Length: 161
Image 1 (tube, one colour):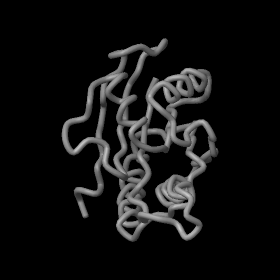
Image 2 (cartoon, helix red, strand yellow):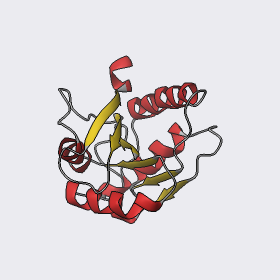
Image 3 (cartoon, rainbow, N blue to C red):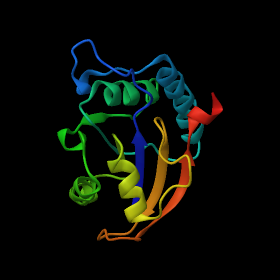
């Protein structure tokens, strides 16, 4: 199973509402999304678009997936409450539930859960780890258990800014 995990791009430190879920992307976060959008469009010339795309209901994840998939045909993201503040265990349960969905599966969420599940499935990412805007593509076998996956690609556009 091909699995894409994307940590939302850099967000503003606070929201006017005072609620963490309402934090929006910063200018640097929007720039990261533009780079990811170009990367995605280039990649799609030879590889299929993920068929299942889930994102956390937080404003920053919604903005991230909207910006990254802007102008990309076939992108149909779905808000998934289970991705909000999901731990590695929550993510393993969600990925297992999505195993019968069309693949690849792409999830957009938050740390530390995303970085932790990468380390659990495959191996911990080398420094700088899963910074905002980092996308990790993995191949994983089912059923999920520690070490069942391999990291295929790490895209860290914040390092290209």
